[in-house]
Length: 264
Image (cartoon, rainbow, N blue to C red):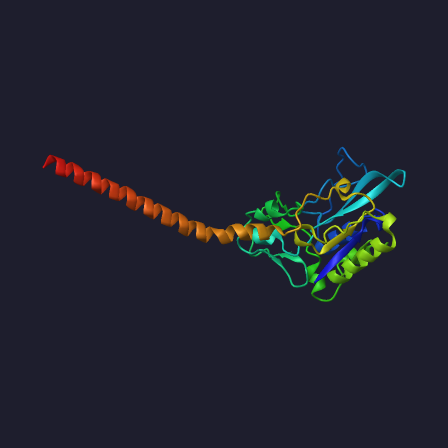
């Protein structure tokens, strides 16, 4: 299973990955919009025309204020909540690792947007034929042996692409060999059952906008327990209602018989 290792300490904020992603996926250019916050970051968040986003965060590191860059994109969960929530299986986890969206299956319910713990899928609100939009790990490139566009153009090696197991080993090696340079965590290794996007950072992940209150278990594993319990609950409820009906009906018959005997 393939994946990314993103080392935020190596990112220089050039946004070449964003441009390459737009070029490969034929995404419309975004007009810069000023908003309160990091003055150099644009756009504010992921949207239908931006599948990856470099975030600008001015934080104190090494005793002074520095720009620390984050990288937001689909995390390609090992057991994706979005695919589990989709009623028509328009989203699927591929053997290669990518969580891929099938346009011809989608009915536009947007359940995937609510199910994603990272708030990644977006919707084409202004389109007459709207689609769910997100990073696909350049699945079309992967199928023919090519490297995803963002990893190919990164000038500093901040984005590595390869087998997930190898990337975990590489991340662990970096933490072990240079512990003072990183927060001692591989983000995505265990979150919600693990993801195919692994992230190293020189600053706390919550300060870079990454959700840090996520469980270790995958989200579908929680709903699976509830769904497995439904047949038993339905059967049990049916038995209780049936017995209750018989008792009430029997009580009515006894009362009716008593009234008839009294009149005789």
